[in-house]
Length: 343
Image 1 (tube, rainbow, N blue to C red):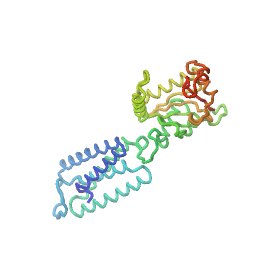
Image 2: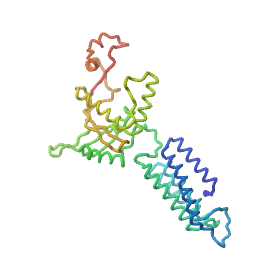
Image 3: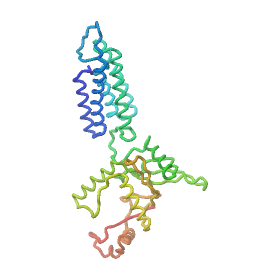
Image 4: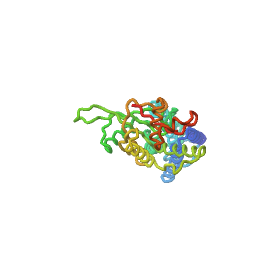
């Protein structure tokens, strides 16, 4: 029977192991804390109410303690609902999982009533407490839009911009930059490993008779800051730390620094996309860097680099001139900097 101590213990340990394997640490902490909290609340309620087992009924199964609420049913409902919200992706499969949990709870409740281990109201109170607690905890602390449950092999840097997050980006663009966005979709994910690049379709000035145009956005989150720290640590171990380079400790500082560099280059006349501003999606967690969108642009690895492009780059990097490239050997050129703007 599912409501026995061994079955509940196996369910508890199996979920902890799976959450650790998939590295869902936030779900794991909530799962562990929720189990302890529900057990404590159920035990306190049972001790306070002190409702005995059914009178004048032969108890067939094993039982101990009071019966209001039914502590085994409370813990079982908590763990089953928690399993659905921590291991099953939202959508069709999660809906199926909820129906399976309902069937398991009904069968277990019927068996406990047949064995005269619980009152019907005790089972109902236990199920209500066991279902309500994980529902409130996981929906408030691990919403699907921020902490989705998925098993795809997509890069962790690429966040899902559909659903609530996409709607939040559109609202923030209008409220903070006065930009009326109509569509937000990923763009150029293959060439990005440290952010989520976005192509944002916006409405132009209706008074001028313009239609729709596009701007570019880079979505940064707390995961990108952690990735940047590990990247800089690995690079420092391999090649040594760059002068005055420090890891960022917040998403806001990371976005502000990139916006500052883009503005500095743009004011100096360098061929970079012009920055349009920073949009706060979630305070201290998600920020969007907005720039102009360069039409017909190519990734750096796909652009053709010839002598004219390298000469142009050498003129920008400290004014070393084109002679630095032409007088250098083919294997070790003097000027290593090269930039290309394809439009």
